[in-house]
Length: 314
Ligand SMILES: Cc1ncc(COP(=O)(O)O)c(C=O)c1O
Image (cartoon, rainbow, N blue to C red):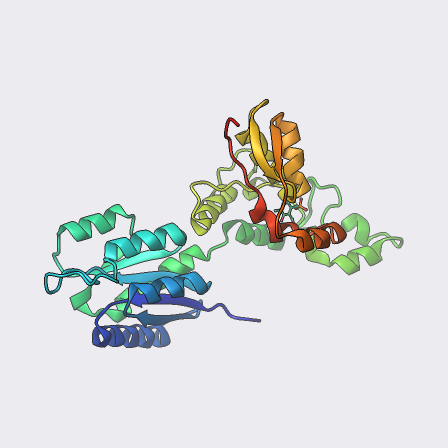
């Protein structure tokens, strides 16, 4: 089975210090427990850092030196940016990334205060060169982020459950497995499909209506991963989620600008809300739209960026 790869980017404008840091951190990653395949890479400029952040989906965290491009000789280089500005850009662009800063011990200046105001996730003292300590903390944070509380609980229940006297009524597929007419369906689908098809009848699996346990925990983790304030899980597919969104955002009689090409669940949501769409003719997407009409599902994601929603009074 493919193993995860996780990268952590170190940003420091002193090439020698950077090389030593990346070497020390990678040595720690090799010698300590590393189930998520953490490796460190380094860059010396903000421009390179932003390029890596834009293209590397395996990037989980960044470690920014707070002296980056600050006034070493009284002049800030024009084409480069301060650590503060860089952190702001990183958190705006990839809010899900963990951001750590490297600071001098006992340092309490305006830059550090400003960096903390940007909700950095933690700091390390540069002079300590405590590579194993830094690695341990970053590793623990990334493992925490990779936790799957709902799925773990689902597995626990499936392994533990002996008989199921609750909904859904197929009772782990028992009614299918025992039937000479449909047991081939059970074999085709596989046991876990039925074992794991469970509902709110199992209290330890929490409730979507009023999540207080593993669903609430999983939603909070998903929100952090997406960089959202809150995440709500929904059943009935993306279509229902779209309808929930449009009925929440729009009031009867309001007008909105809508692309004709968006998924039909969006049109349905707008109709249900009682708002009046003003349609935009789609441009540059004719080929995609034609493909979509042929291949009903799976294509909607390809053009969902064409949805333009404005609560404007036109
Ligand atoms: C943007 C968008 N909206 C709606 C849908 C419909 O999703 P579902 O079939 O889960 O209702 C999809 C799925 O492809 C989608 O990508």
